[in-house]
Image (tube, rainbow, N blue to C red; front, top):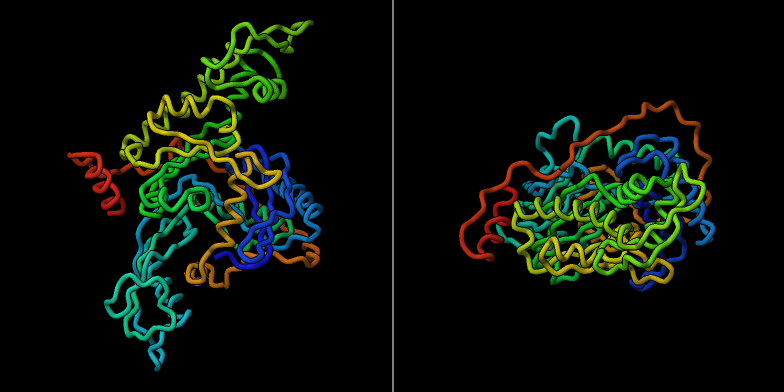
Length: 445
């Protein structure tokens, strides 16, 4: 159940930085402020210029503050899935206090014990999600606090990511005069927010097609099992249009929005529109079908790459099919094309909040919902990573004047084309159900 209070989500995307301010009253979310500023200093989801990114964050926050009528202090910021790794973790401690009653401190200690493992120096633990606790051999306990026991064990899932990405995001948020309440893995928040309980349990694929990259996530048994990042997105469609038609990037973006369709069979070769071509004195007539074929080529490549990766783990056999979201997913014809290439049911998720009924806002809304609905026991476990109490709500007090920052060494990050696991279990023989059970039962071994 969501806690009463004000929550702010910050999504630092390739094409735009988005801020949403939501007020929860009796578990009902009401969005009271929105900010949306053009991104600068971000390439393919990765911060490459800290100062420009800070300015974009400040612009988006200022917009949200003006609409919400508050000054934003604390934000819950999304972490992209680039080079994200997920693995099981387990910890065990002896309950020390005289009464043997398990407290929050014991939960923090057992979580810390689960984190005692070798992590490469270039990586950092982002989050740990408790799956269950065991007290003196009794399993399946969700919250052991208040129980009597001598031995406490925790089984959970640990997420790690590159230090460069996490450091740069934190640095930008802090230089913008804000405090990070919670760092949230974006595909985790997304799958938790937009999928139903049945879809989380039986297995569903979520594809977030953003401006600079496409993130594919697999949810099964109510756990995020797999992520993959393809460094192609909606901006690449715009660049293709610009290159083929020899027009400016801004003109290409307008053409995509006003006339674009990713499924040529739905378009007409007789419907034409003018295009300002570089080097031509007069606009050139282009038909809908030709523009659609340009768009289809790039979108087909995105879906084909996703299919190849998902086929390796038999994820397309999961009954939940595929849920599309993200700004580029709203382009007409994308759902039809995805369904044709992937060969499974595909649907588009659109937020139902007034004024935000566009897939481009799905990520930032999911960050707010995930933070607001985070359980107390999860917050206690997360605090074992930071050593501080997790604060997800914002405050409406004036922000202290920021201290002039010291010069920052700006790190750039280059990542390979794929960020999924290189080692996979051999495919199981037998029917579809056996293959799925085999894969997910051995995924973390």
